[in-house]
Length: 270
Image (cartoon, rainbow, N blue to C red):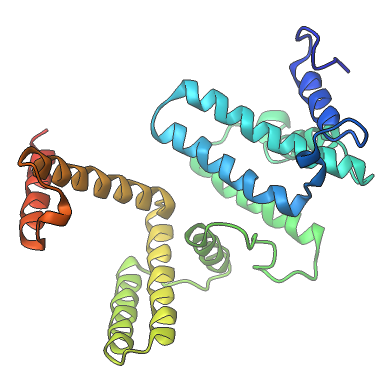
């Protein structure tokens, strides 16, 4: 394996060497040595979000750096697993290679070409077979990770249930269910019962995730777009107020609402 200080001959080997040095019990980094799978997991999730953020901003230079950070997280986990005599980085690579070949028989096997829609269907069928072979005693929903963002997990839960027919037949029925859940939320808000309101709000969000699944829309992506829209319009308010020497704190709801609508009109004409 290359030394971290040597010229790059094999970039992956160099990265693995750096990780091994950081985790060396005698001369490694104290912080890195203190880490475990559990303590590193939040950083792994954070780096994945930063990759998505760079893509959203269309910043390919930043994307290169963020992908490197995410790769380092994979190497970190693999190193700790190797130290525990469980598996090595090469095993991680072999596992994903085998999986991709197995899930693309129309590319690496004897099957003919598939359309994108046909591949999605076949992918789901292959994954279902793998789940059945992996643990026949698992329930249908048991292998959906708990640590996923809640909206994304809600979509996966409802999609898995839909695969066995547990699904609202039409989008109209899903929208009716949304109206029903909103009414139930209103009741608990009026009763000033925060605990029950939280439960009902969760139901509203779960149905919203079902709408996203039915429309084949990523709810996290949709919410990110709405967040960006809110930020853009609120900055318009701040800029307009700043032009008159004021801040939002020195304004009022009526004025800011008028500026919000002005921001909307501006967006429609650009």
